[in-house]
Length: 393
Image (cartoon, rainbow, N blue to C red; front, side):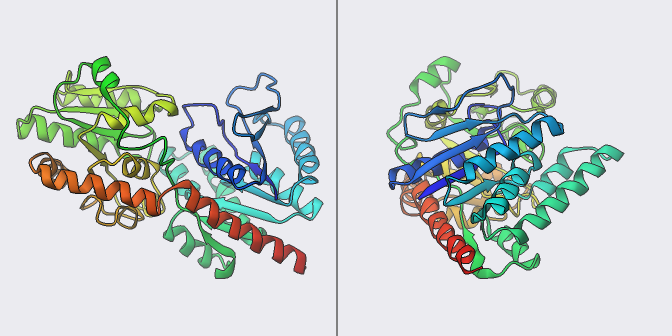
């Protein structure tokens, strides 16, 4: 099968780490004997050329600059690429990628598959402040996110909540497929050593890790407040690490200073994805903290599956997909509850038998279900249905 995949962001940027989803899925398709061309949109356009990755994926950069002089040529390029494809897969609803993909599919009569992995409208609302421009952009995003599921042949959802939203939009259940996040269980595994990272940051005490972006809707503040509770109130001799970067980094560092966490909380900044397994390997306990709202109810958090594959003891907020993902392989706490998060961390640190059990269950969970091979198999079923739908018209 010839699969044309379109992603609105930069697959080579550590600032946009969510791009690993489409890259890992593309690799799985190549392993299964399919041909993949992956269109992406670099953060900084320097006239990048078409290349082929060591895995055999043809990667095609297009400019994400605004204006009809960019948008129209991008449509024409995708129309040309669509001629080769048996199916067109696009991820997310951002107009600069989604609209050219849909237009190319319609004009060339190709099956269209939409991979809906986050409720982008809700993320945009919590990440921006009200203004006339913001409200206009919000309404346009809402229009796209409500319309795309209706015009494509099949759709995959990364969470049960998004599947419900699809049905609310009138999409038939037979056209909706599961496509949760996964982990590369070879790259993320319990045998990875974190010694070099511990030496780099001079870590000698038990380490509690938060992995993720420092953007709106990530609830890193909850992690920092949990660290303060354990260090300042419970007087525990621990080290905390936030591995990631984002536009809220400055504010979060100020919060850590106000809570007297200097020397106790490490901000790593952006880290290359190939080093993420080593950072996870340093941790004694991994944290995934959320509040309960429309964003978190839809999330299928990548950090959790990478924690699972690494065989780590996990404390996570009981919201959305999280309990389904963890199963019995972690401690669940009420969303936004700092005291419960702190107690969960201490429970693991003070009980080596429990810690070992959770680590074993975590790895088993990733091997059986939460890996990219399972996700790719589900998507291939969706493509088959999309092709049947298109052929029957």
